[in-house]
Amino acid sequence: MNFAELATGQEIGTRTLEISRADLVKYAGASGDFNPIHWNERFAREVELPGVIAHGMFTMGAAVQLVTDWAGDPAAVVSYGTRFTKPVPVADLDGAPGAVVEVSGTIGALDAVARTARIDLAVTLDGQKVLIKAQATVRVA
Amino acid sequence: MTINPKLQGRSYPAGDVYSVGRESIREFARAVKAVHPAHFDVAAARALGHGDLVAPPTYAIIVAQRADAQLINDPESGIDFSRVVHAEQKFTHHRPIVAGDDLVAELHVDTVRAMGGGAMITTRAEISTVAGDAVATTVSAILVRGEGQ
Image (cartoon, rainbow over all chains, first blue to last red; front, side, top):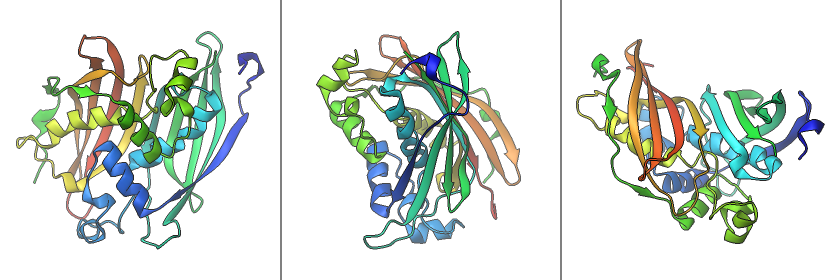
């Protein structure tokens, strides 16, 4: 990737994340976050949630893969942050995804001195943002 | 249960060492649906100049949340884990995390703000190697929901 060819506003691509209950169990195991709100429907409702919700960190972690693949090296992502605005409820469906999240990325800013690009991610569920100010800073070789 | 306002400014020293293994990186990468070969194939990671498999950008959350657990499980904190909602997260990487790293995290409670019957708590984990080299800084804001929130 050539820094000189990048421009603010350029789109870096889109991705669709199909999320199932099994994905949440896998994420719980891989991350060590076993909060039952992410796998136990009864428990989630008892604490006044609409049902089992995805780990915010699952959504954040899966959304950034668009950036990693664009950058060509996962280590090029020098910083990454977001706010979690809405939960992602994941329905318990056999075979079909329980939630479908759309991810798209745009170059939000360029720093010619540091040779970094800020990628702004739009992450939505049914057209509503679930992450806000999801931004990754990428070092461009 | 109310959140102890005296938590602000508290620090928890580095606890257990987290040894980053290749299978842990592969498992985490699969769990976040990552497909980049540098997470799975040592030769691909080395071709990019890394010493071993490279962790995905949010992998440091494993180490950060272990550090957070010290606060959440602290009986003095008043935090009910079942009412914790993740509000904000930021990672700053000082250098990539690779398989073979032995990491520790020092936890700082930067702010505690009462919100309704609950509280917003911001924590910062300074992650370094056991040798003391800075690896990553993670900042998490968690909302502990009060009743009816």
